[in-house]
Length: 279
Image 1 (tube, rainbow, N blue to C red):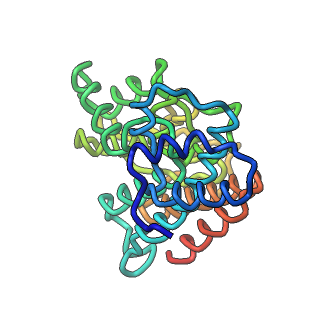
Image 2 (cartoon, rainbow, N blue to C red):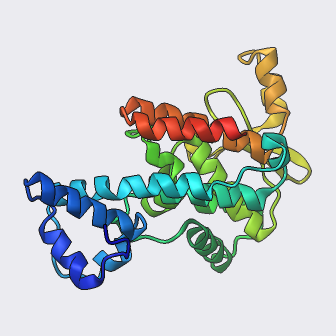
């Protein structure tokens, strides 16, 4: 088989053959598409031809195998596993970029994760945001980011580039976006690994505040939560603790693994489990 990626003229011809029912043709098309690196979004954006829903589905499926290979190849195993990632936020973000590329459909044009985070930080500066609390309001009190209630278990909630593009995610996805934008602006935000509902902590005038990003950025006094009779002793202890980069990544991967299994994407779920095992 020709191992050279297809040139633009050949790609155009391959697209016309996407829904060919001949097994030999389908196999050859899939083999050639597999050499495109798993992402044709930028090239497709230059084409006048509009793919049908069926063609899009076939193309996404053909590109997915390469993205699985890319994820396995590009995954950075932290030295010392999860403990080695503890405060290494740069590696943490790099791993999230790798996950984002894997979860991307390969045909939708969008910004890369780091670029999207940079743009959010720039927009916050232009709006005069000057604290972690003001960033909370900027991100969650309007229409920029909100909870993905209809798709709470959608695997794309772990694709933070998609989340920023769509303005939707689950609790941990929203919190991680908040934290990564804050790091660009040098604001102190901590993760709170609360069972079933990840949250954040900021400090206002020296007082710790718990932020529910999924609940439109709702603010709770940490001191009040620590005295709440509705919480167990274990839950109160967790609220007082900070989640490091390693534990946040591990929880995000477990959520993603569960979401993929719910959609019967067993092959993808197995790969995510292998990544969990590296930590």
